[in-house]
Image (cartoon, rainbow over all chains, first blue to last red; front, side):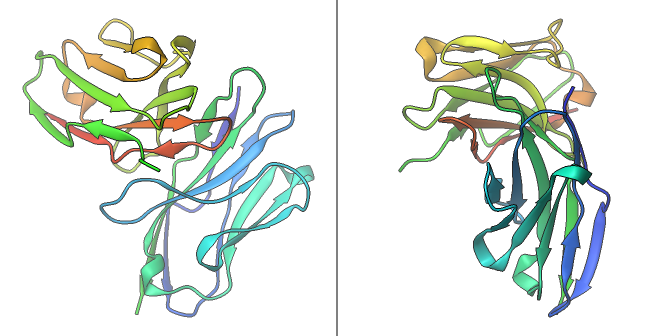
Length: 114
Length: 111
């Protein structure tokens, strides 16, 4: 069965610090990978996605993620965070195929201090 | 493009009462998901529809939860009877293929 693990549950950074959030998944086949973000009081929004091709994908607001197939990882990065990046971040995996099942990790709460 | 619509936004009920949530997905999206998000946890998939057929309901507590998708469009999720541990945000999402679009959710509090 698919599963997703996020290693950091709560991260606190100062503005301009660099960010890396870990995500590992367990599934042996081809996967589609996502990072979603939930700003306070708002609904889940797609940050970026990986389907195939270049393993380094760029998303909105300066975020990027790298898919490392050998490590079953899809870590999220941003070189310099802003106070407005304060939010909860969720990694998600879709094994595609007939079921199109989308499974989420437990989330990482990021607090950026001005 | 209109987003995923959910109602109500908030609901407070007593335990053992019943409650229903409604979701209107983005037009043309074949896949519809219902998730339960308990505070401090990630969304947990309850049920997934492809058009009006159930693809996965392995984590739906079928003794108290039920869901249907009418004519492959709108969907309702019902809880009867509710328990305290059902307090959570219930999220509806729709997808044309792999990327899912989420509604605002319904925050349920069971007292």
